[in-house]
Image (cartoon, rainbow, N blue to C red; front, side, top):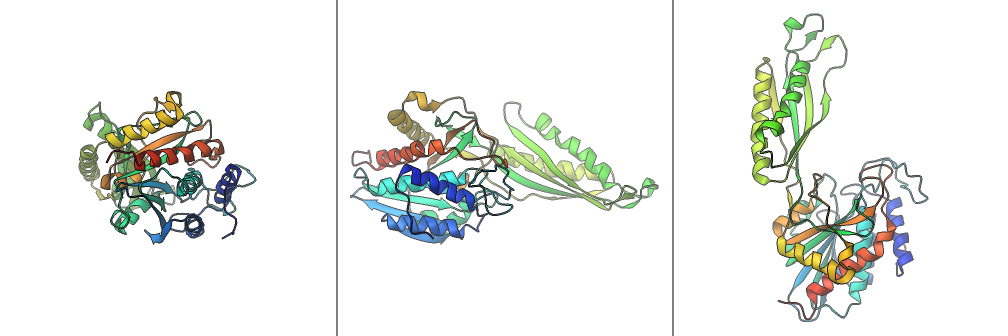
Length: 387
């Protein structure tokens, strides 16, 4: 790790680009974690590493206040080959910060440095740098490693940059804000044979084709029209030759909802539908339904507080009110199941979308994003804050 430490705005932009050029996938964030831990120690935080494998928590205590607050940033990258052509593009083939976690990490580090020097705090700040947000549930890993028992907080907050929202605008969604997601793997077991003699087979390709269409009725005929659900068949694999009927076909799906009860309802209905649809052709369906991320539910009081911080310190004009609940998923939901808090969104402007090989985090939002975390923590832990 370089002895250089960021101090100015230009330095933090350089740090963000340094992180962008050196992306690490889930649970491989060893260099990123070491960098984060080194800076936090230098700024006076008590630091613990290896939480949930590669997570880092820095603790800052000031004054006699009893309140505590947690701020979380994610650190991992995606298995994507970058195509931006930027001077600071990924140097690690097949790995890219295509979701802005390099920016989130930089924002929290910049805020952590400023808060280390703040005279407004009376209480405890926990800065949480989380691994493996992308499909690997680093939040749950940290929680299972005793995150909130070892580093208690009264409330926890996080943010995500959002392409399409004007640059630097803050957006808040109370209640269900991001969808749950579950992976479903369905194996259709039939009986293979020669493509010229289909009567001697049980064709799993035909079963799968029928099932794909039937699955769409889960939303159109089993879900209340006032509710939301998305069932996506993203992968079908079976067979290796045009004149051979295979023994089996595998389908992979994702299911998303904003309602925990509906999430369970679809699980039961989807399983029954797949099994019955296969049986009607003389085949069998084996349904594997591993749980993914739950619905991210923002708590009313903490979301109102977070919105008021933006209004007081940045003005009403900086609050974006048009953002609706998002069908993408986020493992910060696990933290919000354990502690009250809120997950907010910050406009990344007219950039490429998240998870796109041409995406880049907008460095113009770094200063105000860091300042927002500073103001939120100071307001929460102020010597004048209500107990």
